[in-house]
Length: 394
Image: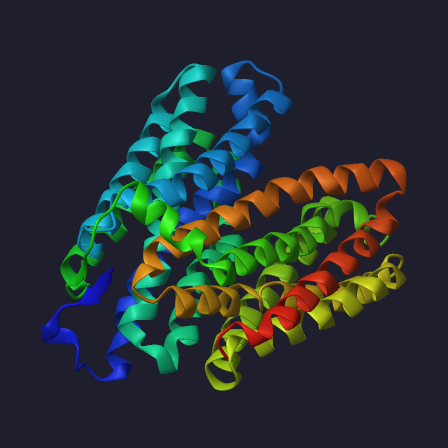
């Protein structure tokens, strides 16, 4: 159980914003680490004397560590004060990245990504649950979207800048910069965040409790389906729009547009979830995304059409994140910390599955078919949410 210290219970709702902003900065550091390594793979491979494919396993290991450790660490720390959890998570995250920057061998770098992934998972799940709690029920969606803004900003700003720094200087400099971001966020959270306390018992009981609620399991399963639909076109955006964006500069424009439109979608969806309810937003967004994906191949041959398609897809793709977390947090109540960790696990499971599903679709049908592979999954996510509507909160 998580409760706000009684001295903060009656704070005006407007007071949650500066606290959510501090948490968003931590999410920016964590998100930058998650995205930037992909852009540094050739340099890392050359430095460690391994193939690029082997270096790519650093991304895989980070994602697996994130997915596995998120609910486990949330359950083990459920009785801790939230500030302690967040600061410990950032310390773990910074330590993992420092080892990455210092390590000279591939094995140690691989192990360090496990440490960084665990710290990242521990931070993100706790940060979103804490922001939602501080904001209160009426502005929960906005608080969640504020924290997620840190992650989307890392996609737009952090990862590209880190890749440029790595290219001009050295990939280890980028890793030190990511370490510094985590260390900067920790004291800000320790000094600024109100006392938000954990309660109840941790361990296996806390880990399993949310999974006994069929509503929560249904939302987590829907999350996997929804984000496989979201990440298939994102992961293979270079292949889908290759005719319209054949070189690195035009592809960079599409990625930037995707990130900017996704940021706008995230902020908009948070407000809509507070006004109309998260279920309605999720259903509407996923149906709209299904339609957009069906039409996407029509824009493959024109850069202007490709940009238009990416604007729509990016906006809708990031519009489901805040409402979906809003939904599970509302259902979980006092167990929000563990449930948001399970949500993060579902999200990273979807990332892994989207890579595999996209690879199969690319091999069997070619890049033009990938949006059509994702569209039915988006529609299915909308249907699953709608069917379960009688049992889920408004």
